[in-house]
Length: 181
Image (cartoon, rainbow, N blue to C red):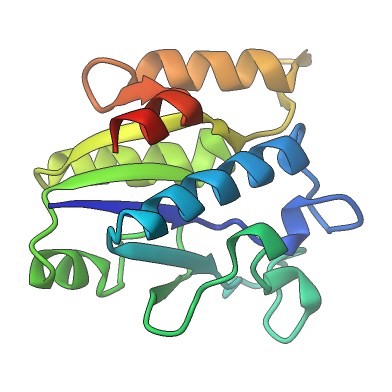
């Protein structure tokens, strides 16, 4: 069975949030369209919410507006919500058990911080035996720095999607994924 997995589409990643990502509004809207299409097809939906647990965390702080889900992807009653404290949605959570209980073998994935939580979760899902389709335009990331050089967000996004595509996931656009549901 196929299911939708939405990773960390939370307010802190959007304008006026504590960790705004490049292109988050467009990605959030596309994730919302994918969510609506999956709901129409009555596919199971699994939301993941990151809550900061580490000392010195600057975003996703419990009790703040930033941990709330973005309006375009608000969970409906009955939809699964898994809270996590690490990049992988599988680490120290019951997500794997929830998916297996529903008979899920294939994941359609969308979410925030392509280079961190999306990448880590997709790789973990692959290792756990799930077939994954990643909605490249339903994800967003940010500019990173290494060795005194900035790697701009569109390059970070392309590099991570290229690394995932083929082995760990099939990377496709939201419109194509919706057409295939």
